[in-house]
Length: 389
Ligand code: TXA
Ligand code: MG
Image (cartoon, rainbow, N blue to C red; front, side, top):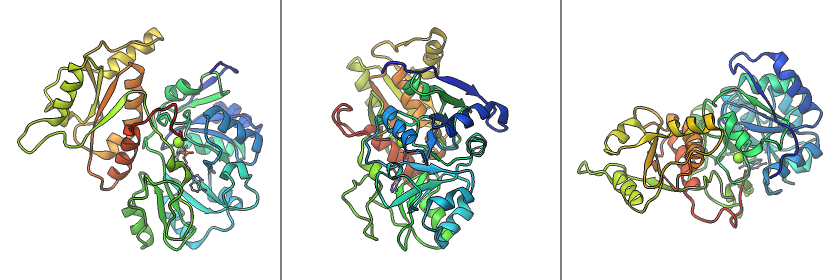
């Protein structure tokens, strides 16, 4: 895509952003321009939710299908109230427990919300982000922001400013750089238009946490990868976004379901060696404990990335070699989720052919981690499959 504007990167202290620095971006958002900003989940690409032309620009620069609705972000509950028909008791209960935080609620929409935001649905998705930069920006702008993840459709969600620039440098006027995102996985999306909450997209707020907070067990299982044709128990359509291909790096993703077998053998190492013997450049994503048992000689992917950043161009991994990105000492879906998208983009940036990633148990945040990993591993051509987000 050719550059059509100069992208200004505003670097801020994520914990205590200087309002003076954010004001320019806040005013731009208010004027109808696009601003990419950090949230605690992933970076969002924001536009004034009440300005249909600004929202249309989001769909245009992302290459996002028009039938995939956006989440509207507000700094506080009073900013959400005008967007929805009413904040039901269940909505208030969930907000009390989890707002601000990585939770998105789907509710019947008010007449104020432009149809382009909700892709014509009679519901709207709303969220109060828990990130000082996002909240300051929204307050300074004085508008609610429609903001999908700030990636081109189908690409992994951005969790650092360079990920946003990879996709949108020269396409949007502002990127606010607040450093890496705390959760690294997008918010849990919960439809609360019926009697029971339905989890449309798993995230860091787990089904268990929702049950504990509300006393109601959310419906969810099996729905995460379903398409829009399926209906939830209240007869409402599922999240349109879930039918699309997402999070896809250019490299092929292989999930190492059982990195270590019962006899102490190592299936993950076998998979890596098989790819290396074909001449593939291989990226390994695992925890340090698992990785140490693979017995592989790999350079950290970050060494190559440093070279790219220094050289300002692509530093390719040599063929038939592997590199590693280790997320922490032990298997842990919270730590793995925090850097999964960064790993996918980093391996792509150094031209890996294959990414081999460790599977984790699907309990708690493991459900969200595995959901994203499976989507990244979905086979199919990025050119022909429908893409999302
Ligand atoms: O963490 C997040 O949620 C990030 C940050 C920026 O807030 N945003 C994000 O937005 O992930 P996006 O557009 O990439 O994903 C929004 C998801 C999509 O799957 C979309 O289909 C679903 O939410 N969604 C939005 N509005 C909906 C609605 N009215 N009903 C059902 N699903 C909806
Ligand atoms: Mg997205």
